[in-house]
Image (cartoon, rainbow, N blue to C red):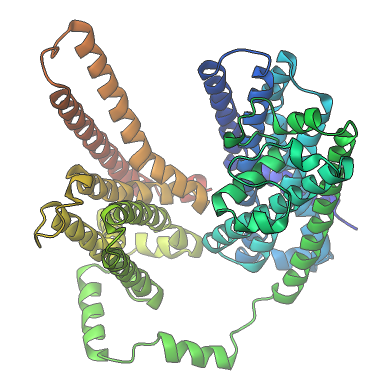
Length: 573
């Protein structure tokens, strides 16, 4: 197999990818934070090393299932989207060789996440309380998780051409595979316990939340949170919180059970790793089969064209739709691109319908609406902001990829009008949904119908203000990032960071410093805690808005400079 050229090409490309380096920094930072938090907040005793090891190992296990699909989700879809997959096949490479070469390179990227945590993992080993068996089992379990998560990313990338479709599909497959993976480990652990000491294994393991007779029937009867907790602890070795076990769960089992249990657990971990490799080989074969089937750009079938015309073409009020689109084109020709397609209209009114249906469903529940409606509105608002950030961060990407940007720049439209039109077009897509969210929120807050007095205290007047200012900041920052970068995921994360996270952190820092000086000089000692809390809240909100206004202005002027410079070939990468 000619795998080496594909692997070398992929490794050279990914070594220059910013996501590779930032993923390592993120994993290491999370591990250091968890390590320091556990070291500071828990007392130092003989189980300190074991607690630190299993905390970092559990965090690493969860991060693997999140980051590895993120790193792999665009490996094959990018080749199909940029029409380079056909060139690789015409060069004499088979689809299986392409998938294997890419999987090897991506597996090395995933293993880097394990190597980054090696310095942190050494410290608990030095502190003691661990055996070499536990370290080897943790290494094999995490390696198996890397291969299974890699398989989820490869399958999602082979099924989709667009990154924004491949990533959610990869995370969905990763969640399903993680559940099945941890369930298989959970069952394998119980089989190891029975095989090591079948007569008394059940009585030696404590049971608090779950009657652990290791029967599948009792596991099914338990709540899903308890089942997932037990499955995760079986895979990572961390002790369940309700069992009252200080040391690791694996060492606890080794202490209470038969002497040959460590060998059984090692064999279980080795079998898990081998099964993960077999499943990864099957995923590679399936991804190669999908690539063979759909690597050419085929036209749509006649049945699909008829289906699309029947379901997605306007069927009523044609004159009204043409008139509205004509007015939108005359008023904002750049923003008109965001309304002319059925996908844009579906996104616009789909969000409006989702907010209306969600609020109606929660209000119809007379038992749980008192706590469900505020939480539902907050979650819907956050998801709406995340969607705004992604759309704004991709508003110029298609123009830059297709060459439409050059045509716009040589037209009679000014740079300011191009940028303003794009931002206004994206804002028009989400304006009905945002207005509906604010109307629902203020209707409940001011208790206009006279029936929401029970939940009015759970809502705050400043949350709609945060949603509004954050949406505006995300629009401008997203337009700026879409002119700078090509990767949609990286653009989306940076837009969220500069539009929401960074202003929030700066506001928290300023508020904390202000509160510290107030306590230091003794000012406000006679004031009530409610007054001081209100003052801190006002200060935080003011700083949050000020930082967002400054960031919005900077994004606007830098995006204008980017358009005037005409140097997209150097900056769009």
